[in-house]
Image (cartoon, rainbow, N blue to C red; front, side, top):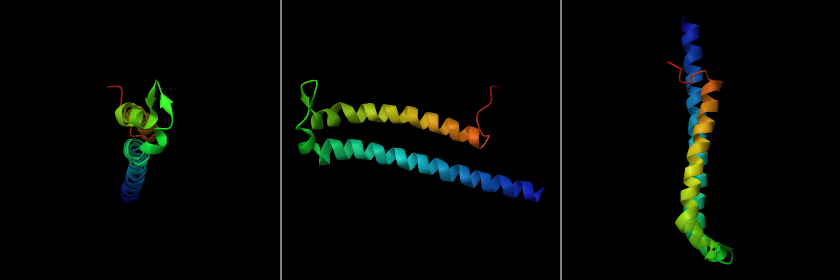
Length: 93
């Protein structure tokens, strides 16, 4: 019985470690797009245009929002995959 509990604790620790890794990766992408493209690199990106607007302006106004929504769906997909890997997915009750 103690061996089974040790395995469960090890699996839970591995699950949360991967969960945090996914979360930090997606937050880093969001930061790079919203802060980097919208603020730090805006002058460079303004050389290019999307729909008649400078690319830096577009990222600051629209691109970071679109990226955030896409990251939500990526997070859902990655977490469902991770849940299946560790057999902790929600049941069809």
